[in-house]
Image (tube, rainbow over all chains, first blue to last red; front, side, top):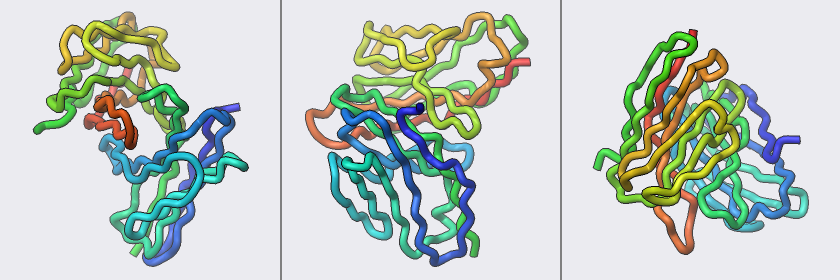
Length: 111
Length: 115
């Protein structure tokens, strides 16, 4: 079983839709949860960060962590064509720097 | 600041050849990483370094070597290239923070094909 599982998609939605991206993880020691966004032929960049359980909102983006079910979500409201990218969830435990990434979900938002 | 730079951008190798992927960061970050990214497989950690002179293996180190003689540079060496090493390679760096997010800053990647 992979430590972090993410549906690779691809996911295609119309502009303005609400997008839900999800990951599950198996290691209960994971405490830090991140979402990275990767545009085509570029390196990933950090989008959202959450520590432990709960929600975090940043503009149109909301990150959610449910540690009881080991479930990580990213919601995008009013999606835009510029949101088209690969979204990677990432987690780590207490060892700083060593992240475990999901497979990435390819999202396309069409006008 | 240029951030994290990688060279070359593209490379085609023949089976059995060797090469070094270069990575440099100008943010004075202690931590540096090498990942490979295969289609639909996410990022796999090859090697990482917590400072000059200190390196350690990640998830998929076989067939690779690294060194870290300065804070800025973290080259990745491929010896005896194999088709299984065809991938996109990303270098990343991060500051060591007591609190706060794991912001790893990634380079633009090197696309390597082994034929």
